Length: 322
View 1 (cartoon, one colour):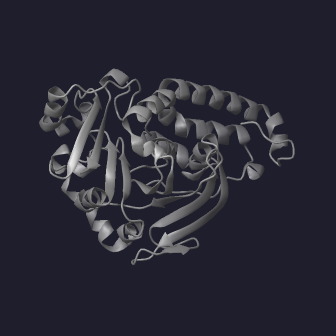
View 2 (cartoon, helix red, strand yellow):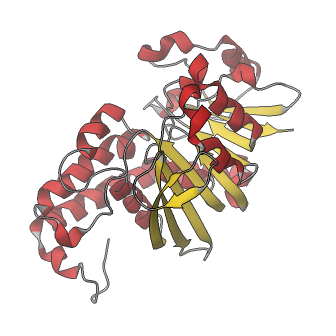
Protein backbone atom coordinates (compact mmCIF):
# COMPACT_ATOMS: atom_id res chain seq x y z
CA UNK A 1 0.00 0.00 0.00
CA UNK A 2 1.25 3.57 -0.65
CA UNK A 3 3.29 5.08 2.18
CA UNK A 4 3.68 8.67 3.33
CA UNK A 5 7.10 10.07 2.38
CA UNK A 6 8.13 10.44 6.04
CA UNK A 7 7.36 6.78 6.89
CA UNK A 8 10.39 4.87 8.25
CA UNK A 9 9.35 2.07 5.87
CA UNK A 10 9.71 4.21 2.72
CA UNK A 11 13.34 3.14 1.99
CA UNK A 12 12.17 -0.50 1.87
CA UNK A 13 9.87 0.30 -1.05
CA UNK A 14 12.97 0.56 -3.27
CA UNK A 15 13.73 -3.12 -2.66
CA UNK A 16 12.69 -5.27 -5.68
CA UNK A 17 11.33 -7.86 -3.21
CA UNK A 18 8.99 -5.25 -1.73
CA UNK A 19 7.91 -4.08 -5.20
CA UNK A 20 7.16 -7.62 -6.32
CA UNK A 21 5.21 -8.31 -3.13
CA UNK A 22 3.24 -5.06 -3.51
CA UNK A 23 2.29 -5.98 -7.08
CA UNK A 24 1.26 -9.50 -6.00
CA UNK A 25 -0.93 -8.26 -3.16
CA UNK A 26 -2.48 -5.52 -5.32
CA UNK A 27 -3.50 -8.17 -7.87
CA UNK A 28 -4.73 -10.63 -5.23
CA UNK A 29 -6.79 -8.09 -3.27
CA UNK A 30 -8.19 -6.46 -6.42
CA UNK A 31 -9.33 -9.87 -7.68
CA UNK A 32 -10.84 -10.80 -4.31
CA UNK A 33 -12.59 -7.44 -4.12
CA UNK A 34 -14.12 -7.91 -7.57
CA UNK A 35 -15.06 -11.59 -7.24
CA UNK A 36 -16.02 -11.65 -3.57
CA UNK A 37 -16.32 -8.51 -1.49
CA UNK A 38 -18.27 -6.21 -3.82
CA UNK A 39 -20.83 -8.98 -4.37
CA UNK A 40 -20.89 -9.78 -0.66
CA UNK A 41 -21.67 -6.11 0.10
CA UNK A 42 -24.56 -6.18 -2.38
CA UNK A 43 -25.97 -9.25 -0.62
CA UNK A 44 -25.55 -7.67 2.82
CA UNK A 45 -27.31 -4.47 1.82
CA UNK A 46 -30.39 -6.55 0.93
CA UNK A 47 -30.39 -9.32 3.49
CA UNK A 48 -28.19 -8.53 6.50
CA UNK A 49 -29.27 -5.36 8.36
CA UNK A 50 -26.76 -6.21 11.12
CA UNK A 51 -23.99 -5.27 8.70
CA UNK A 52 -25.11 -1.66 9.09
CA UNK A 53 -25.78 -1.76 12.84
CA UNK A 54 -23.43 -1.06 15.71
CA UNK A 55 -23.23 -4.19 17.87
CA UNK A 56 -21.40 -4.80 21.17
CA UNK A 57 -19.48 -7.90 20.10
CA UNK A 58 -18.89 -10.25 17.16
CA UNK A 59 -17.75 -13.76 18.08
CA UNK A 60 -15.86 -15.79 15.48
CA UNK A 61 -14.94 -19.17 16.94
CA UNK A 62 -12.58 -21.49 14.99
CA UNK A 63 -11.55 -18.38 13.02
CA UNK A 64 -7.79 -18.59 12.83
CA UNK A 65 -6.56 -15.22 11.51
CA UNK A 66 -9.61 -14.66 9.25
CA UNK A 67 -10.48 -11.15 10.44
CA UNK A 68 -11.35 -10.21 6.86
CA UNK A 69 -14.76 -11.90 6.72
CA UNK A 70 -16.06 -11.15 10.21
CA UNK A 71 -15.22 -7.48 9.58
CA UNK A 72 -17.11 -7.62 6.28
CA UNK A 73 -20.19 -9.17 7.90
CA UNK A 74 -20.25 -7.09 11.08
CA UNK A 75 -18.13 -3.98 10.38
CA UNK A 76 -19.51 -1.94 13.29
CA UNK A 77 -18.85 -4.26 16.23
CA UNK A 78 -17.19 -2.61 19.22
CA UNK A 79 -15.29 -5.82 20.02
CA UNK A 80 -14.27 -8.86 17.94
CA UNK A 81 -13.29 -12.13 19.64
CA UNK A 82 -11.40 -14.59 17.42
CA UNK A 83 -9.65 -17.81 18.34
CA UNK A 84 -7.76 -20.68 16.80
CA UNK A 85 -4.92 -23.09 17.39
CA UNK A 86 -2.43 -20.99 15.45
CA UNK A 87 0.10 -19.10 17.55
CA UNK A 88 0.45 -15.33 17.39
CA UNK A 89 4.17 -14.91 16.83
CA UNK A 90 6.04 -11.68 17.60
CA UNK A 91 4.79 -8.30 16.31
CA UNK A 92 5.98 -7.89 12.71
CA UNK A 93 8.98 -5.57 12.47
CA UNK A 94 9.88 -4.99 8.80
CA UNK A 95 12.97 -2.97 9.75
CA UNK A 96 14.57 -6.04 11.31
CA UNK A 97 13.83 -8.61 8.64
CA UNK A 98 17.09 -10.01 7.27
CA UNK A 99 15.62 -11.69 4.17
CA UNK A 100 12.74 -9.47 3.06
CA UNK A 101 11.96 -11.38 -0.14
CA UNK A 102 11.62 -14.75 1.61
CA UNK A 103 9.58 -13.29 4.48
CA UNK A 104 7.09 -11.52 2.19
CA UNK A 105 6.79 -14.56 -0.09
CA UNK A 106 6.07 -16.64 3.00
CA UNK A 107 3.28 -14.25 4.00
CA UNK A 108 1.76 -14.54 0.52
CA UNK A 109 1.85 -18.35 0.80
CA UNK A 110 0.14 -18.27 4.21
CA UNK A 111 -2.65 -16.05 2.86
CA UNK A 112 -3.06 -17.60 -0.58
CA UNK A 113 -5.97 -19.94 0.18
CA UNK A 114 -7.85 -17.25 2.11
CA UNK A 115 -7.60 -14.76 -0.73
CA UNK A 116 -8.54 -17.33 -3.39
CA UNK A 117 -11.10 -19.55 -1.67
CA UNK A 118 -12.34 -17.44 1.30
CA UNK A 119 -10.93 -19.77 3.99
CA UNK A 120 -7.52 -20.78 5.35
CA UNK A 121 -6.27 -24.29 4.63
CA UNK A 122 -4.90 -25.23 8.04
CA UNK A 123 -2.10 -27.54 6.84
CA UNK A 124 -0.75 -24.97 4.37
CA UNK A 125 -0.97 -22.19 6.92
CA UNK A 126 0.80 -24.24 9.59
CA UNK A 127 3.88 -24.68 7.40
CA UNK A 128 3.93 -21.02 6.36
CA UNK A 129 3.29 -19.58 9.80
CA UNK A 130 6.09 -21.50 11.48
CA UNK A 131 8.85 -20.65 9.04
CA UNK A 132 10.79 -17.53 8.07
CA UNK A 133 10.66 -14.21 9.87
CA UNK A 134 7.01 -13.18 9.66
CA UNK A 135 5.66 -15.80 12.03
CA UNK A 136 2.24 -16.53 13.46
CA UNK A 137 -1.14 -14.94 12.81
CA UNK A 138 -0.19 -11.36 13.68
CA UNK A 139 1.24 -10.45 10.24
CA UNK A 140 -1.99 -11.71 8.63
CA UNK A 141 -4.18 -9.79 11.07
CA UNK A 142 -2.09 -6.66 10.39
CA UNK A 143 -2.56 -7.06 6.63
CA UNK A 144 -6.33 -7.45 6.95
CA UNK A 145 -6.60 -4.48 9.31
CA UNK A 146 -4.53 -2.24 7.02
CA UNK A 147 -6.38 -3.31 3.88
CA UNK A 148 -9.72 -2.63 5.60
CA UNK A 149 -8.55 0.97 6.26
CA UNK A 150 -8.00 0.62 10.00
CA UNK A 151 -5.24 2.39 11.94
CA UNK A 152 -3.76 0.35 14.78
CA UNK A 153 -3.40 2.36 18.00
CA UNK A 154 -1.81 -0.26 20.26
CA UNK A 155 -1.18 -3.96 20.66
CA UNK A 156 -1.04 -5.77 24.01
CA UNK A 157 -0.11 -9.40 24.60
CA UNK A 158 -1.85 -11.18 27.44
CA UNK A 159 -3.35 -14.41 28.72
CA UNK A 160 -6.56 -15.45 30.43
CA UNK A 161 -6.96 -16.26 34.10
CA UNK A 162 -9.35 -19.03 35.11
CA UNK A 163 -11.87 -16.32 36.05
CA UNK A 164 -11.77 -14.88 32.52
CA UNK A 165 -9.64 -11.78 33.15
CA UNK A 166 -7.23 -10.62 30.43
CA UNK A 167 -3.86 -10.44 32.14
CA UNK A 168 -1.33 -8.27 30.28
CA UNK A 169 2.11 -9.72 29.54
CA UNK A 170 3.67 -12.68 27.74
CA UNK A 171 3.39 -16.20 29.11
CA UNK A 172 0.46 -17.82 30.87
CA UNK A 173 -2.25 -20.19 29.71
CA UNK A 174 -4.52 -19.32 26.78
CA UNK A 175 -2.25 -16.63 25.32
CA UNK A 176 -3.93 -13.83 23.45
CA UNK A 177 -3.48 -10.42 21.97
CA UNK A 178 -5.58 -7.26 22.14
CA UNK A 179 -5.37 -4.87 19.20
CA UNK A 180 -7.03 -1.49 19.55
CA UNK A 181 -7.60 0.38 16.32
CA UNK A 182 -9.73 3.03 14.68
CA UNK A 183 -11.85 2.55 11.58
CA UNK A 184 -10.69 5.42 9.36
CA UNK A 185 -13.98 5.53 7.44
CA UNK A 186 -16.40 5.70 10.36
CA UNK A 187 -14.09 7.00 13.09
CA UNK A 188 -15.26 4.17 15.39
CA UNK A 189 -12.82 2.87 18.01
CA UNK A 190 -12.76 -0.93 17.87
CA UNK A 191 -10.94 -3.77 19.63
CA UNK A 192 -9.86 -7.14 18.25
CA UNK A 193 -8.93 -10.04 20.53
CA UNK A 194 -7.28 -13.19 19.20
CA UNK A 195 -6.57 -16.18 21.45
CA UNK A 196 -4.49 -19.27 20.77
CA UNK A 197 -6.70 -21.70 22.62
CA UNK A 198 -8.39 -25.08 22.48
CA UNK A 199 -12.18 -24.64 22.67
CA UNK A 200 -13.12 -28.31 22.99
CA UNK A 201 -15.22 -29.20 26.04
CA UNK A 202 -12.34 -30.62 28.08
CA UNK A 203 -10.16 -27.54 27.69
CA UNK A 204 -12.94 -24.99 28.17
CA UNK A 205 -13.73 -26.39 31.61
CA UNK A 206 -10.63 -24.76 33.10
CA UNK A 207 -9.55 -22.09 30.60
CA UNK A 208 -11.58 -18.99 31.52
CA UNK A 209 -12.23 -18.35 27.80
CA UNK A 210 -16.03 -18.51 28.03
CA UNK A 211 -16.01 -16.32 31.15
CA UNK A 212 -13.97 -13.78 29.22
CA UNK A 213 -16.42 -13.89 26.30
CA UNK A 214 -19.41 -13.71 28.62
CA UNK A 215 -18.50 -10.19 29.81
CA UNK A 216 -19.39 -8.76 26.39
CA UNK A 217 -23.00 -9.94 26.60
CA UNK A 218 -25.12 -10.90 23.59
CA UNK A 219 -23.88 -9.94 20.13
CA UNK A 220 -23.59 -11.65 16.74
CA UNK A 221 -21.65 -14.75 15.73
CA UNK A 222 -19.95 -15.80 12.53
CA UNK A 223 -18.92 -19.34 11.57
CA UNK A 224 -17.27 -20.44 8.34
CA UNK A 225 -15.37 -23.54 7.24
CA UNK A 226 -15.12 -24.78 10.84
CA UNK A 227 -14.54 -28.45 9.94
CA UNK A 228 -18.00 -29.52 11.25
CA UNK A 229 -16.47 -29.67 14.75
CA UNK A 230 -19.73 -28.73 16.47
CA UNK A 231 -21.33 -31.84 14.99
CA UNK A 232 -19.17 -33.80 17.45
CA UNK A 233 -19.79 -34.38 21.16
CA UNK A 234 -16.53 -32.73 22.19
CA UNK A 235 -17.71 -29.21 21.28
CA UNK A 236 -21.05 -28.94 23.08
CA UNK A 237 -20.05 -26.07 25.38
CA UNK A 238 -18.88 -23.71 22.65
CA UNK A 239 -21.94 -24.51 20.53
CA UNK A 240 -24.28 -23.75 23.45
CA UNK A 241 -22.39 -20.53 24.24
CA UNK A 242 -22.81 -19.28 20.67
CA UNK A 243 -26.53 -20.09 20.69
CA UNK A 244 -27.02 -18.36 24.05
CA UNK A 245 -24.97 -15.23 23.25
CA UNK A 246 -26.04 -14.41 19.71
CA UNK A 247 -28.97 -12.47 18.37
CA UNK A 248 -27.82 -13.31 14.83
CA UNK A 249 -25.63 -16.16 13.58
CA UNK A 250 -24.23 -16.10 10.05
CA UNK A 251 -22.73 -19.44 9.01
CA UNK A 252 -22.36 -22.16 6.43
CA UNK A 253 -23.44 -25.77 6.98
CA UNK A 254 -20.12 -26.55 8.73
CA UNK A 255 -21.11 -24.40 11.73
CA UNK A 256 -23.88 -25.36 14.15
CA UNK A 257 -26.09 -28.25 12.92
CA UNK A 258 -29.48 -26.95 11.83
CA UNK A 259 -31.20 -29.33 14.29
CA UNK A 260 -30.03 -27.14 17.21
CA UNK A 261 -32.01 -24.12 15.96
CA UNK A 262 -35.38 -24.54 17.62
CA UNK A 263 -38.24 -23.22 15.45
CA UNK A 264 -39.74 -21.40 18.42
CA UNK A 265 -36.52 -19.48 19.11
CA UNK A 266 -34.89 -18.91 15.72
CA UNK A 267 -35.91 -17.56 12.33
CA UNK A 268 -33.83 -19.27 9.62
CA UNK A 269 -33.13 -17.75 6.20
CA UNK A 270 -31.03 -19.55 3.60
CA UNK A 271 -29.30 -18.25 0.48
CA UNK A 272 -27.62 -19.95 -2.46
CA UNK A 273 -27.64 -23.74 -2.91
CA UNK A 274 -27.07 -26.62 -0.50
CA UNK A 275 -25.26 -29.43 -2.30
CA UNK A 276 -24.02 -31.13 0.87
CA UNK A 277 -20.54 -31.16 2.41
CA UNK A 278 -17.40 -31.64 0.35
CA UNK A 279 -16.17 -35.24 0.10
CA UNK A 280 -14.00 -35.38 3.25
CA UNK A 281 -16.95 -34.25 5.41
CA UNK A 282 -19.72 -36.12 3.56
CA UNK A 283 -20.85 -37.88 6.76
CA UNK A 284 -22.24 -34.54 7.97
CA UNK A 285 -24.92 -34.20 5.30
CA UNK A 286 -28.06 -32.61 6.81
CA UNK A 287 -31.39 -33.81 5.34
CA UNK A 288 -33.25 -31.24 7.46
CA UNK A 289 -31.20 -28.42 5.96
CA UNK A 290 -31.83 -29.78 2.46
CA UNK A 291 -35.54 -29.71 3.28
CA UNK A 292 -35.37 -26.00 4.20
CA UNK A 293 -33.65 -25.22 0.89
CA UNK A 294 -36.19 -27.29 -1.06
CA UNK A 295 -39.22 -25.78 0.67
CA UNK A 296 -38.17 -22.17 0.09
CA UNK A 297 -36.86 -20.34 -2.94
CA UNK A 298 -33.46 -19.18 -1.62
CA UNK A 299 -32.12 -16.00 -3.22
CA UNK A 300 -28.89 -16.84 -5.08
CA UNK A 301 -25.47 -15.64 -3.96
CA UNK A 302 -22.86 -14.45 -6.44
CA UNK A 303 -19.75 -15.19 -4.34
CA UNK A 304 -18.27 -18.37 -2.89
CA UNK A 305 -18.61 -18.96 0.83
CA UNK A 306 -17.18 -21.77 2.96
CA UNK A 307 -15.66 -24.91 1.50
CA UNK A 308 -17.30 -24.70 -1.91
CA UNK A 309 -15.10 -22.67 -4.24
CA UNK A 310 -17.83 -22.47 -6.89
CA UNK A 311 -20.34 -19.80 -5.88
CA UNK A 312 -23.15 -21.73 -7.62
CA UNK A 313 -22.66 -24.50 -5.03
CA UNK A 314 -22.20 -22.15 -2.04
CA UNK A 315 -24.74 -21.13 0.55
CA UNK A 316 -25.23 -18.92 3.61
CA UNK A 317 -27.47 -19.56 6.61
CA UNK A 318 -28.67 -16.58 8.66
CA UNK A 319 -30.30 -17.47 11.97
CA UNK A 320 -32.02 -14.61 13.83
CA UNK A 321 -33.29 -14.95 17.38
CA UNK A 322 -37.07 -14.45 17.65
